[in-house]
Structure formats: structure tokens, C-alpha cells
Amino acid sequence: MLRYTLMRLGIFVGCLAVVWGGVYAGLLPSAVGDSNGVWIILLALVLSAPISFVVLRGERDRASVQIVERMERAKVNLELNRSQED
Image (cartoon, rainbow, N blue to C red):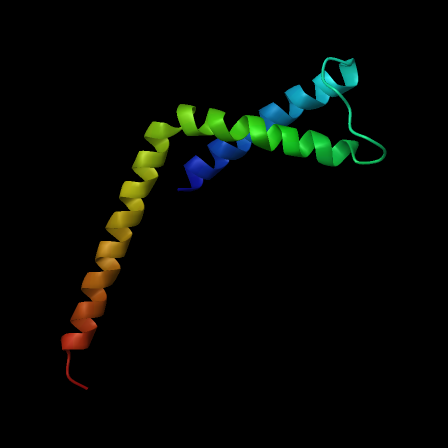
């Protein structure tokens, strides 16, 4: 799960660098007034979301399997605790 999160963060940082470079090079429009930083972050989020969805499909599946296994172990432990006498 941590690996997926770090990979997703890496894609966002990469998109942030590309958008920042594009805005300051004049290739992308800059925001109105003092909201340029917010504009760059929002545009990077919008770009990184579909990229992460496609590129990290396998890693997301592995992370979900780990979560399901952890939940199954927790359910078994809970059921064992319920069946014990006080």
C-alpha cells in the first residue's frame, strides 16, 4: 500500500513539474491574479489522476489484495475472540 501511495505521489510531482514548467514557459495559461500556485496544483492533480489510473493498475490490484487479506485476518481474529468465554 505504501508503494502504491509513493508511486502515485511521484506521478503527481512529475505532473506538477511539467505543469509548472509549462506555465512559466508560456505554453499553458497562467491563472488570474495571485492564484497561480493553486492553478498549477489543480492542473497537476487533474493530469495525474488519469495517468495514475492507467499506469498503476497492477500496483493498485496488488494493494487491494493486501487490504482484503488483512481484513480477512481481522475478521477471523474477531470471530475467535467472540467464541471465547469470558
